[in-house]
Length: 306
Image 1 (spheres, rainbow, N blue to C red):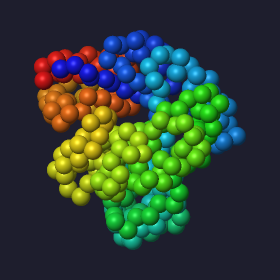
Image 2 (cartoon, rainbow, N blue to C red; image 1 turned 45 degrees about the vertical axis):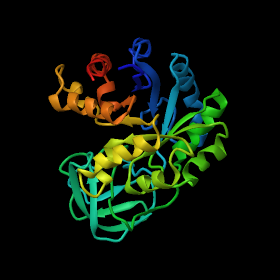
Image 3 (cartoon, helix red, strand yellow; image 1 turned 60 degrees about the horizontal axis):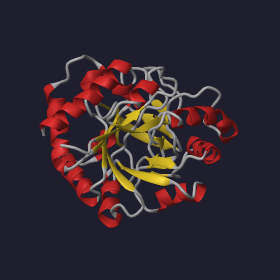
Image 4 (cartoon, rainbow, N blue to C red; image 1 turned 180 degrees about the vertical axis):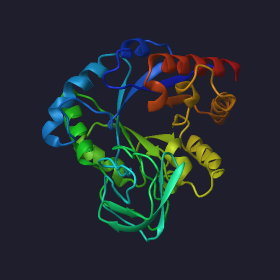
């Protein structure tokens, strides 16, 4: 099979960045905007600190994609157990009680009250919950105030000055989401990350009209009503956009050991069978040189067998 392309998530100060960028399968680089940048505190005033990092990553060669968080709920500040309060990146409303999920859905806590951006819980995960961690509230009554965060605005400001246009936007659920990005960066080339049931409804209505689609499986798996429904979601996105990207939970076992899990290999083959030809490797497997290069080589080997 030919035509495989991989987008690699690069830590902003990785000393192996140039080597990874030269790999023949690498068709793009992703900067996850939750990564810390020296001199940047998430505000517009400190956006000039982003410019040298953006310019340096763009100079590596492959197209650089800046991943904005949009309405994705993320922990702001840290919480040390025992705790019953978590602050998140957006003010929200939801009918309580309901469940809040942490750690890609592996942990949950009962949400008793919401006070703006404060989540008041009955209990908490038995571990430190760090800033930037994703929080999922899977309830049809959920209303999140606003879309782009202050950090998103700062990145768009810096991108305009550096001359970059490629944006990934998390949790796209309505046409106004990509339109808001283009109002700030008119020439933006957008990837719309589909990560929720409302996102799937958006795909059914709009298809790829407002930007290339991405099946962002990490949050999408948590957000669909039943685990097996992620399979139909993956098919729906691939059918709506033959050039769709698939991301998250790809070859994650290589972050922990040199031999991948059998299920990881079969998973990639299944995604190729659905028609996906662009894969995005996530944070975990890309933090170390050896694991990201192993993942790239394994993706190529699996594609050759399918």
